[in-house]
Image 1 (cartoon, rainbow, N blue to C red):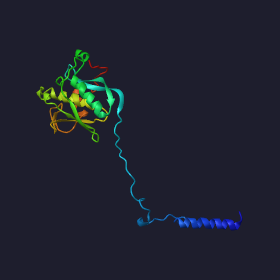
Image 2: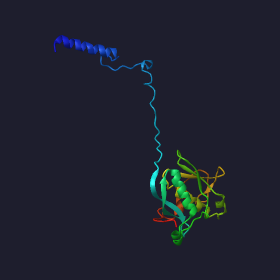
Image 3: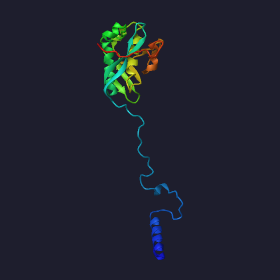
Image 4: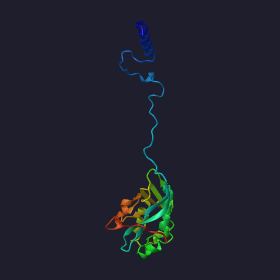
Length: 213
């Protein structure tokens, strides 16, 4: 390329950069806010870090809490249909309402919940992961020592469902104070930790392979 061509090319580049607002001295410059193109200073869209658990397809095995012969709770695996957390929670409550299978009763397992207890999931708070359950009046007739076991059965069984961290018991829209193993009443949502002491000396008390029957 001839020298005069290189000179013209260089001059064209300088003029182009100048027209685009790029400083010719190669130094970065801070622009006043009113000179920044519209929208560039506005914050971009934010995304929530909370991710709802994906529905479980097919069948899954979940531990259901029953009362053992020593009056401690034990966990028995049951196969329930998969799906969204609400669907699985409803299936778990149905298992509790039906009670232990014949084979489980022959092994000395029972339920503190009266037979046919109508346990209904009224809502599931997806942000707090709290399942709200209508606590039937039939449970009020239980002996005082049976009530923590009945509550523990529901809490330990439901909190095994992915997407459920705690359980709130209500009657006619009002929170039902629930007795913990130590006898104190709890009015906040009930967590697994509140009732794990009912599992006895080992929190791993678990019978695998239970079947409704």
